[in-house]
Length: 174
Length: 102
Image 1 (cartoon, rainbow over the protein chains, first blue to last red):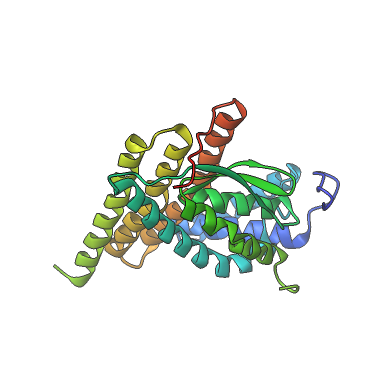
Image 2 (image 1 turned 90 degrees about the vertical axis):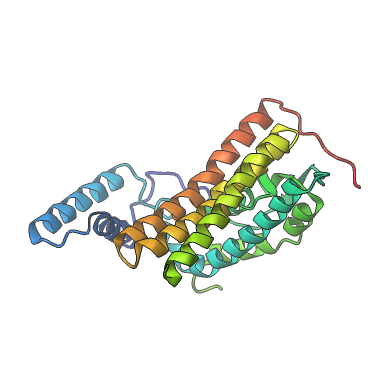
């Protein structure tokens, strides 16, 4: 298991501080749509204030600002959305079917992620896909409730696990 | 009606279908955990299709971006909420019924 980062032990890395500011500034502008210099000035000031507060709160790390996975998400999210769509159609078919062909099962799937962030992404992906819900995230496994045999077998292929682990490694090692 | 309006209408109708299906699933499915699966339909494909339909109507502007962000937010918060519910039920001893193979 990797060493769990202890908050407050490390100084925030410039890249994370910069990413926090950039993200806040982008969201500020997308939300407000203002272009007047004075209003933008207020925006920049409030973004800086929030960055300062976040650094003080020691939440500016790779968990708060996961830049290491940001690029990988561009490849992962479309795949996940497609899986979600397929699972939606499957579960909708089960719900509309008169004899309600469910086969509920509790089972564990192994996880190969190294970080808590990777584990959280995997568990959330499982829950987000209709037909499987993550009940309990343990050290090296996730306890899952599946609605049908198809849902269970789909998850047990391990493809989602592999993709999240690849995503977690980020640039360089991929 | 323009092509955009028609495509938007189709997306809204499909999204509504998945939302209604989720509701029916909540009623039809037999126990707590299987109902948690039905709750995922409106939150994922239902919301995505409805938001996509609205984005088409909004046109390429900041409102469309905000609608997309609503979708992103839903996709992050929904599994967190469902997991919190399911985990709370599991750790408080709500038994998960299991079916034998067909």
